[in-house]
Image (cartoon, rainbow, N blue to C red; front, side):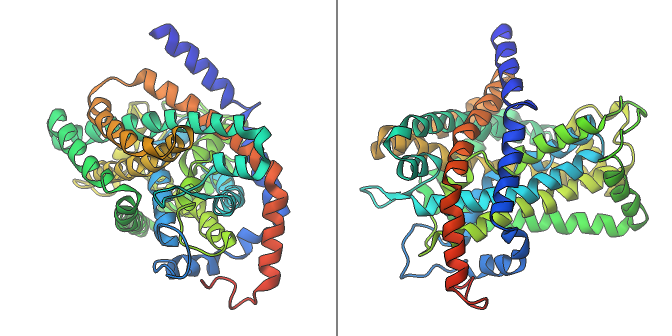
Length: 458
């Protein structure tokens, strides 16, 4: 097993390395943001207003979930352990400058997610049971034609496998480990409770998942951001130096200090980009599967909600974690151990007695919603490969895997998850580049058709 794990790690390192996936992800985002003439950056405020209005679905439009709930289902998967552990990992290895490159990936990722959500609605299908299905496998098949179906099948296969790893077992393991450590809860009890709660939600299908995500995701994101702001206000004299270190070491090597061995500019860039993309998933192809369920009459409108997802996830939520870690001032200490311990210590330093417990609860909620979001992704991939009859069996198996992931050692599962997560992105990015003329055309037509005050109305 150790040899197999090493082989998968090596292959995953190549896929996620500086010569394959990372430049392709960033390059696609840069190409799309330029092709869209920086539209996502210029329309952020009205897009947020559109998100707020999207809480209520228009009964005259088609779909399964309101635009807001479709977006929250997507964000349920993106706002996860990457916002806590991923940020700390980037700082541990790449130094404070890695945070700057996380922001850059989010800004270019806005164009990527806009394009993904637009194409998902544009090329979605309706199953015999009335479910709206979409995502990379459908815009590859319906947008690029029959000769590309093999690539659509590859994406669906990679996505289905990844959903059991990165979307289920690893999240369950993180929940069990953190709650057991922080509160002394028995791991078996946590696993059983998690199995029951996940099962109750998943048995209700995508609509119940959307209902839960529509409540839990905004609550946990807003609470996390507010607490981060409170901590910054309590330590206002340290906020400036923290931000300064981010910009300073984004363009200069971070020196070795304490247990930190130092980081070059390339290391800051590499780990900042990698952790940023891991957190907001722009370009991986997972998010558009959720956006395809939106009740809307125009794919561009759902694209507006897709484009602010990376901003909320990375620029807002991830930044809270990063600033609090840097405010604590000992991120470079050798005794910080793992990334999770570093974050827990930073919150405990800022809020003695309660900070570490807040991190444990936040991580549990983040991971729980990630499970729900990835169930939607996995089941839609299964439906594409095996037909609508695969829907209920997939949910059953997905639920049964929960206690397994919660209790077992997951070294190999983590490695396999990273690999298949990266493999998902390859066919999706090729499709985005080939279908970019469709994205640009629909966007131009939409902005030419609607006046500014009607542009974001349903």
